[in-house]
Image 1 (cartoon, rainbow, N blue to C red):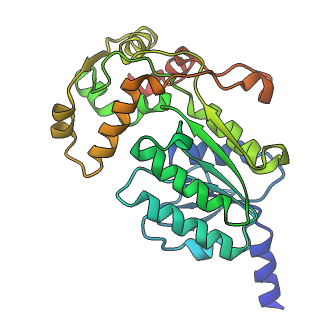
Image 2 (cartoon, one colour):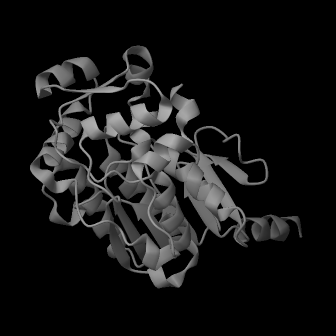
Image 3 (cartoon, helix red, strand yellow):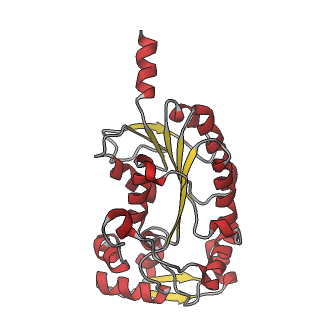
Amino acid sequence: MKGMIELSRKRDREILVLGATGTIGSLVAKELEPINELIRLGSRSKPQYSENMEHFIVDVMTGKGLVDALAGIRKLFLITPDMMDQLGAELRIVEAAVKAGVEHIVKVSAFGAARQDYMIGCIHRSVEMAIESSGATWTFLRPTAFMQNFSTYYLPSIKSAGVVRLPCRDTPVSFIDACDIATIAADSLVNPAYINHSYEMFGPEALSYSQAAQKLSKSIGMEIRYEAIGDAEYQNEMGISSAHRLLDLYRYYRSGHAMGEPFDMVAHKGRELRRFSDFAASNREVFV
């Protein structure tokens, strides 16, 4: 009897949200919380917001904890950070999910992945193809640059020097708010209308980093500057093993591929996409 109860407890979990402490994963979990679905979170540490949600320790880099976290799961939200073997890590997750009987996978991919003409896009498309051939149904979300990059990756230099330094020249980018991505991701996990569809997710306006910095400055009441730097200078400053992939991504930005037709949020949710000024206003306390 005890074994049957334990099995039923595993089987009553509908959705596993990986990356539950990350920008997108945490937002997806919060979007799903009021919905009549039972959520399990997977991350290396327990999120502070998850008191009422089951949590499993999962290291997507090594796969540790993955089998236990997937037990009884029907739907998977798949997102991983930029890391050395992101392709290997995600393929391992897909394989484990299929073995566990997962029926539907919602994956955060990358804009333009279908063209496979830049490194990160190639990585994500390879994972997409593995999911397509896995027997599970799928939804692929392909967003461009997150507005939240300013409040995470760029935040240390903003706080220390009031500057964002990137090798992006003044090329426009259709930044998208992570909240909008999470909203569609949550819907894709519970609404069958999204099954076997992919979505390019460009934001509502194409802004250069200079223009984005100006909007941020106006909103938070302090000057934020953008400095366009060269590839070599960026690599020296970053000093990380994945810098070559980021440099390739920024080259892709400079080619003009990071701007496009805005995602039709009105058709999906009856409201407009959040603009950069909305993001800046709602995150003012992060910067000040």
